[in-house]
Amino acid sequence: MTQTQSAPPATWSPPAQQPSTWQAPAAAPGRRGAIARWFEGTPGRMRAILILAAVMSVVFGLAAAQGFRQSEGALERAEANAAQLVRIQQIHTSLVSANADATNAFLVGGLEPPDQRQHFVDSIANAAALISVASAAQPADQNALGALNQTLITYQGLIEQARANNRQGLPIGSQYLRDANAVLQDDSLPLVQALVQANESRVNTEFDGAGHGTYWVVFGGLLTLVILILTLRWLARRTHRYLNIPIAAGAALVLLTTIVGWVSLAAASGSAGDTRSGAYDQTLALSRARIAAYDARSNESLTLIARGSGDAFETAYTESAATVDEQLRKISGIGAPLSAQWQDYQEVHKVVRSKDAGGDWDGAVDLAIGGTQSANSLEAFNAFDRSSADLLGTTSAKVTSSLDDARNGLPPISWLGLPIGIAAALLVAWGMSQRLEEYR
Image 1 (cartoon, rainbow, N blue to C red):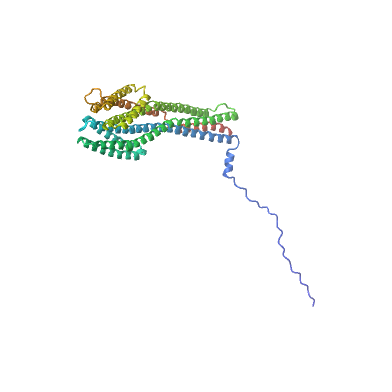
Image 2 (cartoon, rainbow, N blue to C red):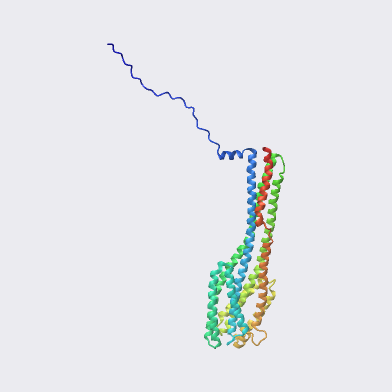
């Protein structure tokens, strides 16, 4: 048999790879590309300038509104804080007035004169009422005013004990009176002085801030005008049209608002400055003079009560009298009659001291309490008291009315500022859209 040879086993080889022709799909154009194309070329630059000028116009409107709100708020707060300061000083005056009544009436012995007693009661009641009003008007003062009210209650209690013992002719009454005076000097008046300083600081801060609103209006207006002018110049060079009326109108609106805002805010700031250096300073000087005068009056009586050992009280009198002279010199233009009345009182005081030093204590007391002599310390002091109170009422009212007039005289840009800015932005958009239409 013939053997057939088998074929060798077949070997497998992988098919030859063909070069691939597949490519990834092109990326879809993104938002960034669309935005970039929107700002391409001259039309794109027009759109960019339009956005910048329109946004800046609105920002100017907001800046103008903020500037006027800031100045109006500063004037309003200055008025409120000045009124609070006057209240605090009236509390101070009422306290030292009551103390002067109590010490002077103590010299009488027994029952004090009804008019003087009533004046003391009215002064204490006025101080208590003003503490309540001031506490409601300025929350920041509430804690100090609450503490002051507590010292007032303590002071009243000591005065009543002094009166009760004095009516019975007991020497301990003078000790109660000195204790009451110590409570007033060491506890009450430091609180009042702290309140005065705090409110003076608030008033000065607001007076300083009354003109700060001008910066918002002027800087915002100038920056916006620069951008609008550059926009007009760029358009003129690109389109060969020398004036774009809507954009020029928007620039004129911004310029007019800036000028009106600058002038009105500068006038309000100047008026506030005049009030500060005029009626406000006069009010402060009068209040300080009245407080020091009452303090001097109290020390005159305490010197006599001490019967020969009142050198410390006489020294305190001299210091207080010097303060009155100093404060009256600050208002020499309107306070000449007050200075004359104060000098009249000073002359009577010299006679009181002369009689006391010469051993005529009864004569000194009679002169101090307004007894049998026609030219006496009480009448001279009351004349100064009445005149200074009337003048203080006039100057404090002038502070309020002047600040109120300055605030009410401002144009209503605090709420018209944003509409003005939007109007300028719309004018810019209108003017730019006219040029963009030419590229369609």
